[in-house]
Length: 330
Image (cartoon, rainbow, N blue to C red; front, side):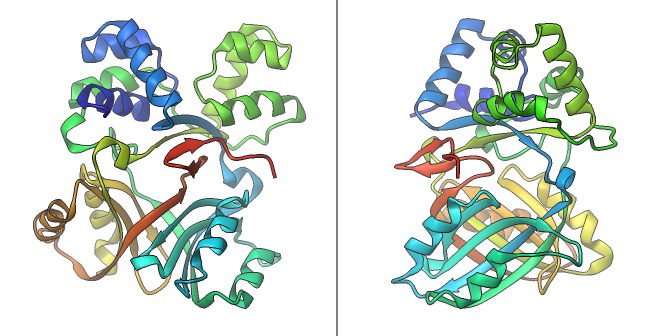
């Protein structure tokens, strides 16, 4: 079972996905060899993946949150099929096996051709569907995804990790055909070395470094750290759909995003204003979160909860037999 040291390493990677093992060792106070060994064990066992992704906005895409209420006896095959589609960025089964929650990448323009969204309502297993636009992700320094309460870094450690990280300033830059080997390699392993990237692209290492810096600074290339909380001792995962007073939307979203239990929080269209993904060790832990941290926030008018029963896909990884794996080409 991974321990708190593994959690601190994961937090380091969330703050700086391509940071060197040496810098991590300096920040958390263990040897470089220990950091490398722990990371490689987490990656080989399918608990952790660092991946490089092209910002969907480069292709004029936005993210849509779909909730599908389904027949429980037919939900599995549909959910598995959705998870394998490249335009699906996240998928899980929730609410006792009667609901699929997924994020679909698609255009926001008037000339959308959403074959998937046209097909879903016609599926025999789908009883009802709602699709809302994910308008704005909330985030705060040092909260780039869930890491677990006990393994969090101090603000000073976060600053030491992020002080040299590239800050996207735009404008977005469309990748070229020459970038394809580079981006394909990063999609499989976001920490692949400059040496290996030079071999795959036929470029020199300095050219690789310059191109990475250009794509990262433009906001074209982003990184995601996929982790399986249940393999780290956190068994309960819930999506909370929150209604708030509109003038308080940004304040409330930012406050929720700073909670240790929060894996993601974003503003959305539709009946609810905020979608928050919460990770807890167990049911009592989740109850304490609801009645303590969430209850103390002024401006929340109501909420609804979907409890995940099966995780199918993270941002860039399929979950196969309890392991994060690279999606097959489709």
